[in-house]
Image 1 (cartoon, rainbow, N blue to C red):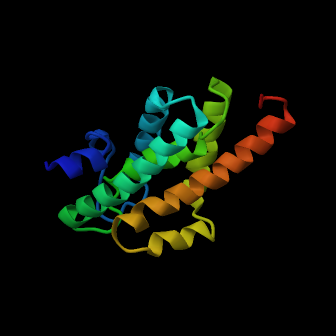
Image 2 (image 1 turned 180 degrees about the vertical axis):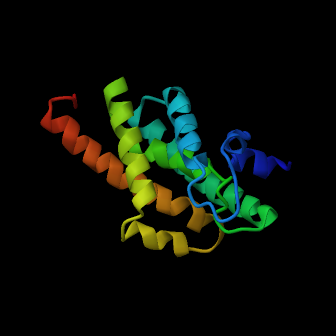
Length: 158
């Protein structure tokens, strides 16, 4: 396995999920999001540093996922989960570092990543790795905004 495939598959975590012909829902995206959640505490707490790390991660993910999909031979192959990892980081951006906020961001991100609403659904039409990653970034933005609204309404945002 090449380095870009190893990174795109979340260090191989997506291979745990069952695969099969024509299966759209393999569970790999869920596992990628779990990996994003597990790595989230390692991201900087400073707002500016977090933004820089996530923006660099999004750019790198576009490049890595583009190379991986070419070698795997399929656009947005279900084994590619790096997009879910960075998508979750967007969903959790600048939320309180609590389990409540993390779980809320996780659930909302998984929902919005699964239903693929416009306008971010259209981002998957972008060529190469950008099409793999940017729809997840869009789902992360929507999840983040809704998480903020929910947390603010229940007094969970400080």
